[in-house]
Image (cartoon, rainbow, N blue to C red; front, side):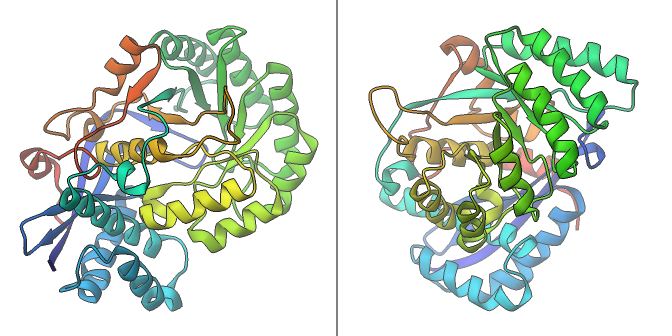
Length: 389
């Protein structure tokens, strides 16, 4: 079997409302899907992390840089292909967009391998430690509105996420430390005293400001404080973890095993959040997961994107060993964006219906059992939303 063609599909639509986080506002939803075709007619699907113009640029890397390197290769030689591509791109970026692009291709190769074997990816990895995974919902995005309006809306949205059946709720911050503490207090009021809530700063704070917010989160019994400082600030992460009781999480903006080795050896994370669609795909994710567990650092995958990304993560969460083990081990969770996302809800021929599953099963989502990543996109849907680039 040989690889005959690789196609990037960049999808986009105007969202019903503008949303934001600590770095920017956005009014369009994007997704970047990768289709790997073979001479046997088997097609694999993957996804690259990165919205908007980042996705358009990554399309060029996938089709103009990576595709010529691996046309004619056996798609089952996915580890050989991974190292071939990484080594040839190494001089031009060991992180960032080259790795995002390689990620989508690698996931598609794993999808092909599963289809050839007639097995879901979790079986190829070594089996399922669980046949369902708990899910948490995130929302509570920033808007161009007053602090008072944010506070009222965040309390209501937090309660709504709890009532949807999710086992936790994650909010955004980024208005400034004192205003952000007011938002966190509103979310705690919204969900009540005995419900998990998490805070995502998207690396907007200095270390001193992160300590200010983090001490408030201790009093509010937040479950984790995500990306409090810049991903490059390893010393800041270590200081925050040593000085705060709230769990410090992060890692979505880190790439490959070498970047993750630095984070883990630095002992700056209570919870690791690798992004499979960015760090190098499933092949590299498994190496990063092994590193995390070697450092006894639990993993909750970062999940952003379409139903392809969600399905891929469900396969990985099924295959994740419990850490450290026991009768009642610590369990991972599926991250789920509760804001409008047609590329997650309507992309597939047979939708995953995550919110329906969560509501009916007490907060859990089943693992797809079909071969590969376990889902197939609707090509007519792709054609309807694909942009020219």
